[in-house]
Image (cartoon, rainbow, N blue to C red; front, side, top):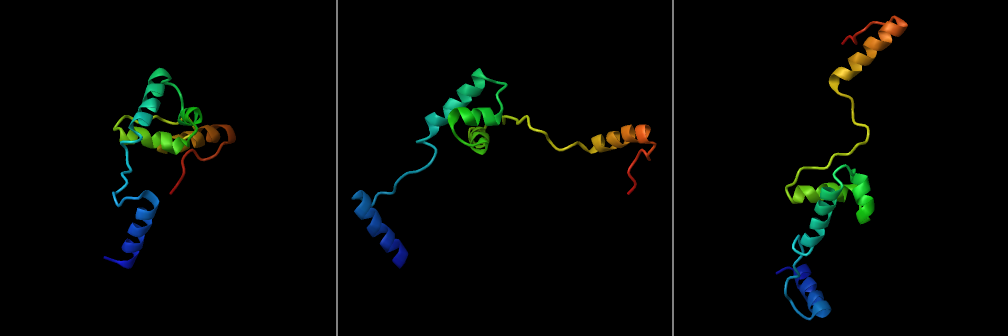
Length: 106
């Protein structure tokens, strides 16, 4: 047994009066994870940041909870990256207006 383990156990005995392992994990928060699921059921069009604001947490925490429960994810309505074909459509439109080449070379 290492010296660090010994000191950690002595501190645990002083703080709790027992050497029992303190259980941490999802069991204590299981009921809390059901609340966002019910909220999404009642408000299916709510965004991640709206749900996070309601539960006073971050959007990342709201995104992580459905993953843990193996549910479908809730999408964010913020601006997403353009799709591969969209940039060429922009150049096609700009080319018609400004008489530029319609495709990117390269």
